[in-house]
Image (cartoon, rainbow, N blue to C red; front, side):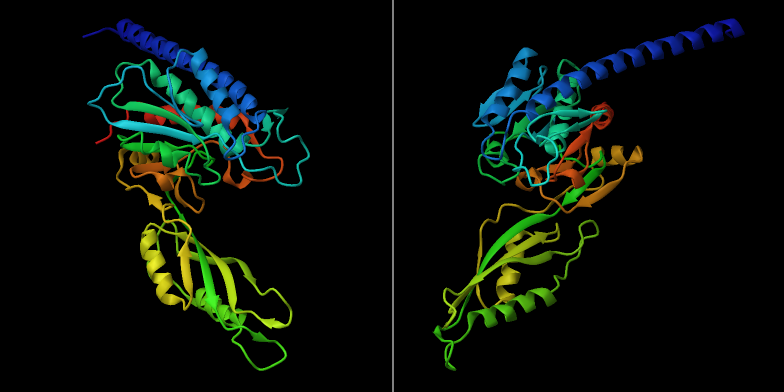
Length: 381
């Protein structure tokens, strides 16, 4: 039986080893954080409006090249695979986007200049989605050299997310044909969005009959459209999601008439529909078509609601760490993925698309560390 001195020696040794490992981890995190902030500042100062991301893509590629990371490209999309790839292991995709919306009115700073205000990094795209993007890239670099991972990793910096363009993730999913699970980097305060609403944009056309406004003739398409819009206002879809709530329909644009004294024979309005995971987009379109007495034409059917099962290993690990899980009302590239995915990242969605957009640098450091802890030892079934 070991004596007291031997037990104390073993305890001290264990503590010293733990401290050494922890110090090494902190040094690695610190360097990844420094590199991430440097890259984010470059991206902020490289205009990358959705559909015009070429220069931002070059910044990503230069960053990877400088670190000896081989990558593939497709238009303005860039992706890479971990060094010790094993075809027998499941694949995890780390994805975020490089494009931004146009700057809105009200900026007090230059939106294309990275302004460091005492730990607050201000600039267009700093929060959405620069912070999640550079954090996920840091996580990829952390795991890249490891030869004992229980999964493969793909990092993808993609284009045209803000405009739901066809040259972004929609084109990449056709190339990345084997993905088991994806983490989509969007500002969620590092909480976990386990579901998000989809989007349908419907062009609705109501037909009346033209006539002279001074006489009692014609059928006013505007009045008919009002009846259709009232149906929309009063209608409720039966299936309500516990995470995402009801399917939400909103008339956002309307247009009719070309002259004050002519009864308009055509009235067009646009219907914005935010879907939940209880319906496919096709089911929603069918139900709305039956509801309305007008022509209904969807602009696209591809932006479906997305979600993940609550017993997924990543979700279980998140819950075990006391991290909040929720349903997100905003759309991301998850809608284009045909595999299970979650949305998670540093920053706050409330700052997105606003004047003086910013992210706290401490949020990025926390994000990198938390991503790593969640992936460390993760086993996908």
